Image (cartoon, rainbow, N blue to C red; front, side, top):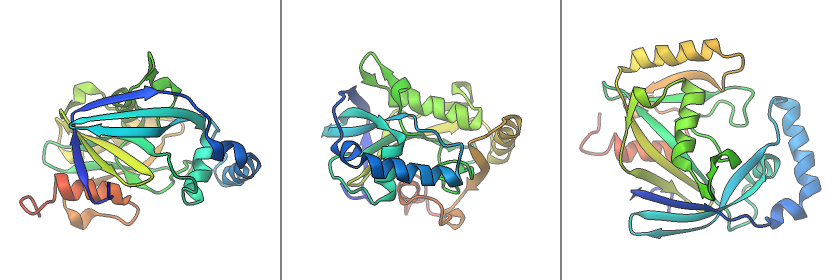
Length: 238
C-alpha cells in the first residue's frame, strides 16, 4: 500500500503473538548507546515496552494482524536509523477530533517527548496495557490516548463506525473520526486548561485546522493525507 492510499476498515482482528526481533537482539549494544544519547536531550523518556506489528492481512473490510513486544529503545533506534530491517510495521491508532464547526484539533508534542514539535492527532505507540485476553485493543488505546493527552472522554464525542487506514512499508496509521460536540475555540480552551493542570503534559499546544492553509511542516505526511481525503477533497475544498 502506498502512503497516498487510504483504505476504509470496519473491523480489527489484532492478536498478540510474541516472537524475537533479530534487529533488537543483534544490534543491542548500538541500540542502548543510541538511547542514552537520546536521553541526554530528553531525560524524561523511559525505556518501556511497546508493541509492533509483524504480520498483517486485509480481508475485505477487516484488518488482521499480529504484534510482538519490544523495548522503546529498539523502536526509537529503528525509527531514527531509517527502518533498517524490513518486515515490521509501526501500527497505531489515532483519534481525529473534529469539532462541531467543522475544524480539526491536533496536539503539538512537548519538547520532552520522543516526537518533540510534531503536530498530529492524539496517539501513542501500543504497549502491553493494550493486550486484552490476547487481543491488541487499538480502539481502547485510542480512547486512552485521547484522554491522557486532552482530558476528553467518550462523553465529549461520537466515534465514527469505520477506520481510515493510511499506510506505507513501515507505518500504518488507523485513524478514526471523533465528532466532538463543541466548537473549535471552546474545545481548544478546554484542552489547554487540562494541559495547564498537569505537572508534565504531553502536549505543548493545540492547533486548529480549518483548511489546507493551516497545514504545518511539522505535521506528518500521513496526517495531511488523511485530511486531504476526509476533509479537504475536491468536493469539500476550502
